Amino acid sequence: MNHIDPRYDLTRFLPTSAKEVALRGWEDLDIIIFSGDAYVDHPSFGAAVIGRVLEAAGYKVAIVPQPNWRDDLRDFRKLGRPKLFFGVSAGAMDSMVNHYTASRRLRHDDAYTPGGRHGARPDYPTVVYSRILKDIFPDVPVIAGGIEASLRRLAHYDYWQDRLRPSILAECAADMIVYGMGELPLLEIAARLKRGVRISEITDVPQSVFRLAPSRPTPQDTITLHPYEDCLREKRLHAENFRHIEIQSNKMHGRPIMQACGETRILAMPMCPPMTTAQIDASFDLPYTRLPHPRYKGRDIPAYDMIRHSICMHRGCFGGCAFCTISAHQGKFIASRSQRSIMREARQVTAMHDFKGYISDLGGPSANMYAMHGRDLSKCEKCARPSCLHPAPCPNLDNDHRPLLSVYHQVDALPEVKKSFIGSGVRYDLSMAPHPDPKAEEAGNRYMRELITSHVSGRLKVAPEHTSASVLEVMRKPSFSLFHKFKRFFDKTCRETGLRQQLIPYFISSHPGCTAADMAELAAATKDLNFHLEQVQDFTPTPMTLSTTIFYTGIHPYTLEPLHTPVTPAEKQEQRSFFFWYEPEQRRNIIASLRHMKRTDLIDRLYGHHPNDPHARPHAGRSRKPTRGHHKK
Image 1 (cartoon, one colour):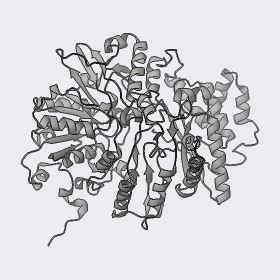
Image 2 (cartoon, helix red, strand yellow):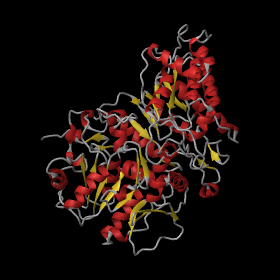
Image 3 (cartoon, helix red, strand yellow):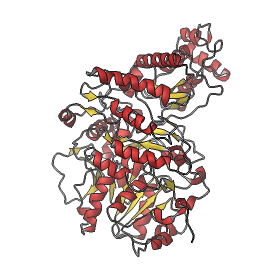
Image 4 (cartoon, one colour):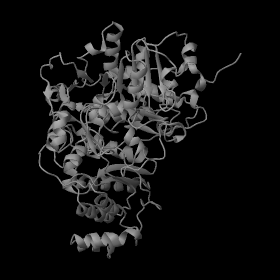
């Protein structure tokens, strides 16, 4: 009797070919999903999540990963016509972020493709895939989802084309967008289509975006944005629009938003309320194999290699960073899994054939927001502020870290687990924030200590992002003085425990509001702390963030006042060079820049005698060969 290795048993995965459909005994399909990513059957990959959720609801679902859009289009025809709809997604990243660097240079790899090979997806797959499907199957509904469609759901600035673009729904052939985490909206839409409702008649599902028919009235309580064409003529109007979009995205009960594009009216329904623990557990507890599809046998998928032994414990982020898209996609409110569900997945990870005892990440969008919410939820229901941490932690926020520590302890108690790492971004301003309950406040300190002593492999990465108070204010990040406080805690903990850990800070250059003088101050401030920076990034404008809106308009949407923004390659390069002040080839240009600014005091701090000069006394945390890595929030 032949025994099939479970890793290569096609019947354990959603089908990707006609042969696999036949293995299921199916003669037709209800839903076919086209994805710009390789198919990895793991709860961190959106196409797998949506496929599994729909499958669990009784639908026959298949996935066509990375279809060839250049040839005779056989990939788009091979599974035929679904009964209900086609789903299209660019993948887990916006395709332009995936394809191009901050300097608009073409990347030569793709982490979501076997072998890291570039070129397996087009620019804007949402547009390309939907047009092809509508050409071949004009009467079959097409629903777009994923990061690209989600963050381009209304007019947005496209950095790579350097222009304001309309809603992606005005440029693609999809009938509808489902934005954000789409399990609940898609289940509702699929149920209605199955009952025979036409997709043009589905106009009230949360998190859906669609073209409003001329005969249909605008729903009550709708916010009407400035039309796209008006925003093209006057950038200030786009800034005004963004404020409405962000506020409604961060409300528990938002309002519909409408924007005209030519003769077309685009209507975006508000977000769903945050998922309940039972709902999010139901999504994570589905029978994922946690493996790439067998079609990729022998080829590594870099993005999968990074997360194969990781566990996501919650969704959402209330940090509200100006340059981050998490809240625009996942929402501000935290949806946390039960400890039972997390432990179930932890046991599944330990049973994997290649598990060596180390969980690579026990986290979420932000590592330490698990099970956190407002103490008085009625206040949260009315709240419209985009961040619960800026300009100061909300007095209503319950930042108790004890539930999170309980999960850490349970996972680490599993006999197969040697160590669990925290690879997600840690908000030290959250763990250091006060709490009215002394035991909860003590738990914040205990969390930081356990993080440093038990969940770091020599290097703890945190993201102060900048040192300038004015730049941090625009970023919606805490004062750099808080990083100093955290560093003192870190150093003290390492001394007391005899550990030789490194603290690795992330920083961003050329962010709106940042000047060359601010970057020079950053260089001096980090030199004083004996850092040779390696985790740095030049600000990259991505759709639907506050920072990108400022970059494009030159105006802060909440004040409507002008704000200096570095936009030219020369200014951006000048700012970036200050990260690497210690490199001999940068020294002459930096000194010239500082003289031009009349900041000879900083020349002395960077290149004169200084008691903490790292050339004289290397810092324990200094990389022998600094790398210019990219920080992605």
